[in-house]
Amino acid sequence: MLQALARTDRRAVVVDAGTVDTVSEVLDRIARALGRLPAVGPGDTATSRAVVGPESADAFSVEARVENLSAADPAVVVLDNLFSAEVAFDLFGRMRDQLWATGHSFLVIAIEEVAGALLTPPADAFFDVRVPVGPMTREEQRDLLARRGVGDIAEWSEAATARTALARARAALRAPGDLAALVQAQQTAAGLGAAASMVFEHIRGLRRPVTAADPDLLAELGLSRATLARALHRLADVGLLQAYSPRDGAPGRPARTYAIADKELEA
Image 1 (cartoon, rainbow, N blue to C red):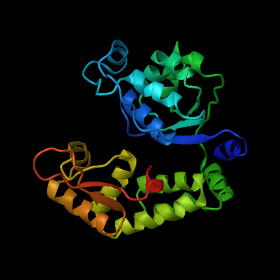
Image 2: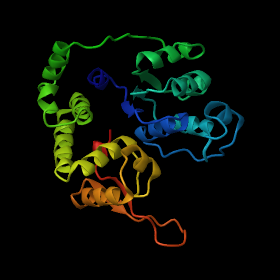
Image 3: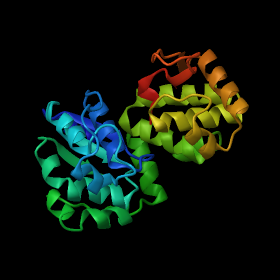
């Protein structure tokens, strides 16, 4: 699909929505993929309250985020791993007309539950073409990977968790160079221990900076703060993470912050 788009004059960007649970997060990821910084604007508006709820409406409004996308050159936005039916309906149903006005085309890859939300009015009117895709057989998976020249995913599974194997398959389908870099990074992280490997994979999916006190990271990984801090430090030492201390004007010593050093390795 991406290769077919590359043969046209249309720019395509891939956005992984696998770890998001609000419309605002999806729009921010789309903006970054299009080369835009997150929108800056008033937050508590009638539309933002209706879309994300009063408790979730953050500093920047949903409308400002959508309008921000309009400033980017028209592109095909490939939205992958959108697992929240509620977010899907809010984005393509309640914000349908605003998304239309951005000038971008959207290709959404969704599981059956999310597809049902996308086919519920008014979201159903957003999409001109719907292509149901059934589960691939093992032979079809092997054939697809063989066409890309990367072998069988089973070869990776022996030395990788299901999560890392899946990440490698996706990287391989984008470009062989992506796969080689990802495999090397994952092997380096694995050499630092199970905790470091798990932290690295999770930060790849978050696509945002973290600290050793990050409550979401601590809760989801089930690690102690000390263990998380050691893992982050080790990953930074080998160059997989970039460490810095942001200066925000707040009193006291700024928290050590970490981000993926090579943005091409983000999920």
